[in-house]
Image 1 (cartoon, rainbow, N blue to C red):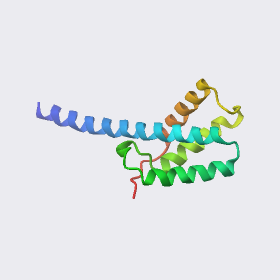
Image 2 (spheres, rainbow, N blue to C red):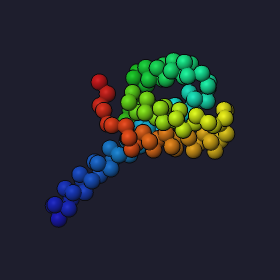
Image 3 (cartoon, rainbow, N blue to C red):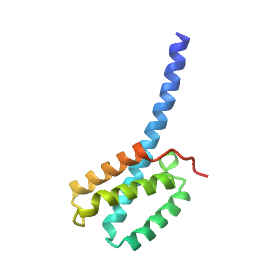
Length: 116
């Protein structure tokens, strides 16, 4: 019984960390897609991404859902790659689909790095 309780507690903590990662990547993906929609100019996108990353570093309201710099960059790079041929502005379905794709890629492929 005690062993089962310990295994459940460890599982819950791991599950909580995975949910937090998914929340951070969803936030990062939404911001990344918004940046892509704002302008097709990659120079302007880079400036906006840099500003978003700096703004997120100072944001305390998002707490555990505040994306890291790696997560923001990973979501942006994936969204940029996927949206290469998509006409802008994205339609509602295209926007939502792109956010989901970028969030999934961030969750799966961006390593967990603790903010400093």
